Image 1: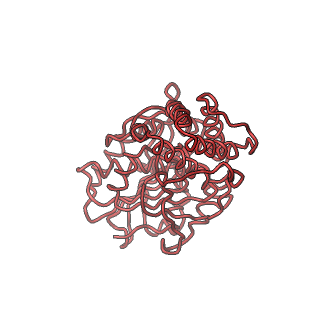
Image 2 (image 1 turned 90 degrees about the vertical axis):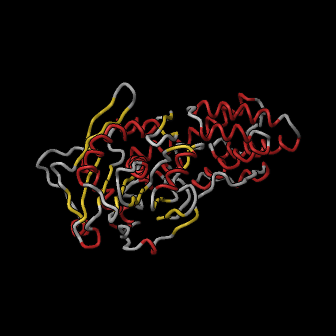
Length: 385
């Protein structure tokens, strides 16, 4: 049993986009590399799902199902899920509420609703093909499709009725759930190949307290530029995930240790000009906030925010209030708060000379503008893909 190559995985992620507007009798453009190993039943092998908000949802093709035919993959199955392709998908992406997943963890409500819309038909398919312990179920997706592939992989592994190993392949996927979900998925799914471009803003949202799976281990950095660029999210343009993943072995791709949002980071106000508009600094600021809360005696608050179901706005209200309290505890902690806020202001594009205040209102404003810049970049990137 073997993983599919980076080249095939990326081409499957791209192929899944053709499912959105599929009509019976339509032919798909399938690369020879994929045709060699997998068959797709375009009559029964396309599953529709919904995306959008609570009061407006759109139904389109979402999931492409394939079965291995080569000797290498003869007992395997492919579940390829498309990413953001229309306005309704964009509404799903930007929701910041949470809900419970099928396995009981806290996850992004927009992703979970879309997954729930195609889960019954997917379950019927998996029961029909009778997955076996000798095969692998390959769950693949880019962008929103990567998030849904993560929920799919975790759900399959949590259900004892489905046999076989599950491998997860994502490209430029956003974070799906909080600490509990990322930890459970990391432990359940047999192999996870999470691929990112260093300049892609979408994998940085939703922001902490959401986490990626694998929560520990390695991620594949297909393009190592760190400044945030909207074009870095596309499958085909910019660097293009289908281009940067064009390798026949995972051993040929640079991998790095997953950025640890629980890593201890202390930011210095005097060094705030070192802050750059980059994906790496997004992680560093998140880790610095957590470090400050723990050092200030709010470890229980951190734990609650990581596992609770509060929406992002409420989370940052609580954090702003906590940081304001920490600033009053001692001169040393106030200097730490100053360093954090100074770096956040530079990151948000406000410059290095803003007067720092230690009020809850000011701190909440700094959180708001920092979060807004990250989310705006992700939204713009999703529109361009």
